[in-house]
Image (cartoon, rainbow, N blue to C red; front, side, top):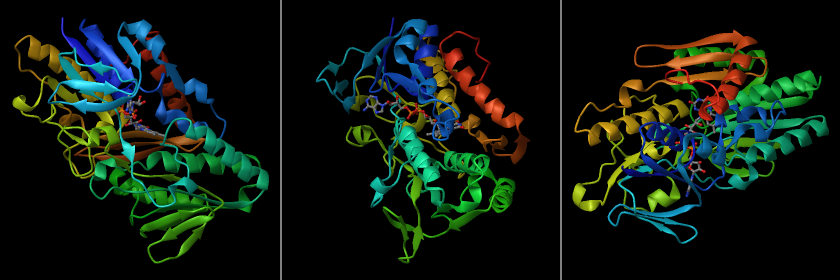
Length: 394
Ligand SMILES: Cc1cc2nc3c(=O)[nH]c(=O)nc-3n(C[C@H](O)[C@H](O)[C@H](O)COP(=O)(O)OP(=O)(O)OC[C@H]3O[C@@H](n4cnc5c(N)ncnc54)[C@H](O)[C@@H]3O)c2cc1C
């Protein structure tokens, strides 16, 4: 029986572990976190619509449900050539047949970033954002700026959706408290048309929503630095802010950048359609795969690193390992599944956003959209724990 080592316990790593166990492989998952985190629903932590703990699924529970081995430790080095993975504890893992790298991404580093918080950073930051939201609500008035940045070396690493969602939720919170008029809410981004990847209709709709909710847009100016009380742009102009939530674009994971894996310019691992890492056989001990945010996505200009793509890659790799072992070449690729799919929450409803190579649309779903997304969060937890059946493809 093949021995498979998975690095990372996020959407990609956990899905790979679940599907490889279904094929009866011996699977070991290494994670530097004790829990799997349901990132998409973390937008509700700052406004107290949900509790942080509800988004954490204990990896031990997942281990018990599916029967994989679990090591909670940080990966500090990966050597394809030696066929070794080194952990923070000093342990060296080398007794595996196939390696799956699923460690997510690091973030771009901006000057003064410590003056901001990101909803896409480490999970616990959602609680720090909550503290800041509480503080600014207690002030009774103020200026709140939310934004996201790009990575010029890899356009797929941009993550803006959660920024829009959180801002709409904060807007609704202030409205419920009857104090919205005392606040200036601004969304900022260095690109002239943030959200463009969702398609032209979505872009128009977002502009309308901003107008309706009295959210100012500050687009198209490069960010120079962040200060305690605002954002400085390339022309030295300043956007004043009492609280800045900023999502830096993804960048290659630091450990991976220091490994001997082949990388694109941004530091993401180069893979083919089947998620095989592009290393010649003479330069590696084992087959290596990279999946999820760690992998360099190829294809459409609008492609984006998303959780459902991470899971498609994971299921494909589980299938492909089995196929390879049985001598078949019916491998599955991720490219034909590239799409943007998200239920963008607004606190009192949501919009269904979809884009693939043929279509791009955004459908408003007042009230019901919000509850659909909430329902998905519950589904994600219990279906991964095997307590409710999986809906195919989800
Ligand atoms: C707020 C938010 C909202 C989102 N909304 C959506 C959405 O609506 N739809 C959608 O499809 N996608 C959404 N995404 C994107 C989605 O969550 C990511 O694409 C997905 O998490 C990627 O999964 P991953 O497993 O590749 O990486 P991650 O989820 O980042 O997991 C990486 C794992 O590796 C572990 N790790 C990292 N470094 C090490 C190390 N050195 N040693 C050991 N372990 C390590 C981490 O602890 C983590 O468990 C959202 C993301 C955020 C942050």
